[in-house]
Image (cartoon, rainbow, N blue to C red; front, side, top):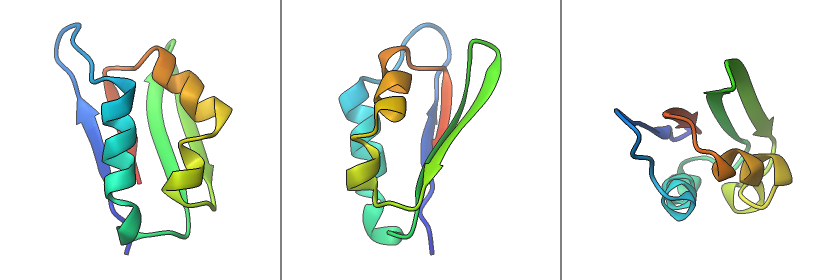
Length: 77
């Protein structure tokens, strides 16, 4: 069964990139078949998903790029 995590921010405060990565890595034991993240950035819905472990997913350029300008809401599995 997959784990689900994420965050919702009110105002300008956002988690750090390291905190977001820790959230995702923390649920890795709950499911190693696929990892993904969904968020709205620049008024566009973004979905990044791949059949890899979270340990590999957090190294992807598209995921790391999303962490450069964290959106107010992000859901991950």
